[in-house]
Image (cartoon, rainbow, N blue to C red; front, side, top):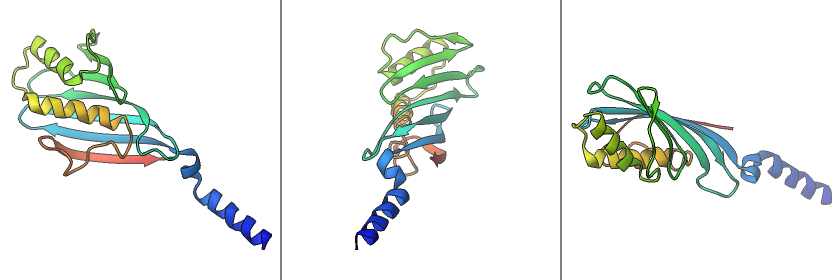
Length: 156
């Protein structure tokens, strides 16, 4: 009986390895803000610890639009922007936890006025949430204004 119990425990431990240690993730997502004429591509990587729903990751990506010529690059964690670059120049982040406010300030500075504030606010939330892992990432039907173009998850 002890051998059977030991074997059963061993099988459970080896088959549920990710539940004991957690897992690493990589998410690739593309979103479209139609009114603002913006596309956002995001790649997020990180780890979700065992027993947790969301993790601590890093997201990086870029905004493109036919309304401005250069690409806007960003990096964030799940709570704030860590980097914003436009025309290969680093933008000073006066309030990195206010991602939508920071983006609106940048859009105003580059004379990109056709954005919709509500879309920018939702995009800010999407970027931060994506850095939290698969359960934080916005999918089709979870957005109000933003169109989900694609979302791919990879777990280890």
